[in-house]
Amino acid sequence: MRAALAIAAGLSLLAAPVAAQELPRPVTGAEMRAEARAMAAGDPALLAEVDAAEAEATRGILGNGPTSIRQSVPAGGSWSLSLKRSADAAATIAVRRIGAAPVALTVLDAAGRQLCTDASGGTMLTCRIAAGGGPIVARVANTGAAAADILLLMN
Image: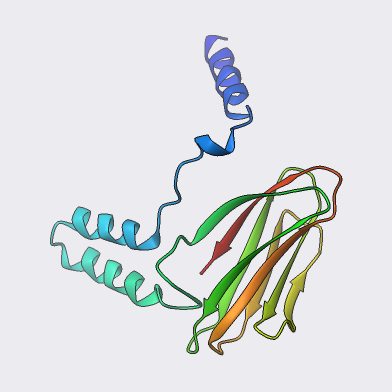
């Protein structure tokens, strides 16, 4: 019984809303790979895995920024992020909807042409963009009556 009460108390704490200023800074892929390299402690097999992960780091979306961004999109509004895609590898951009507000993901090229859209209404929206280099814009539109929190994920 005590364990069930402790679990219920923990769940209610996790469900409490978090103010935007309390969210931690996203961890970058470079930071994770550096920590993995240090933890490998010279083990050749583990270092080979870290090297493979570093080779993958330049696939899809280019840059040293975070590979995920949490954002609040106002009701009836949209939020956009400019990205640079790799000329050598396809890019995958996904949006994880947090909450019930409906959102849509659209990816545009530098000329404003739509490359991909996912307005399926699911909790995970995905666009895969062919290799081609150059800037693209990921736009998340909230068609709901309440603000929506989203997590934008990029390879």
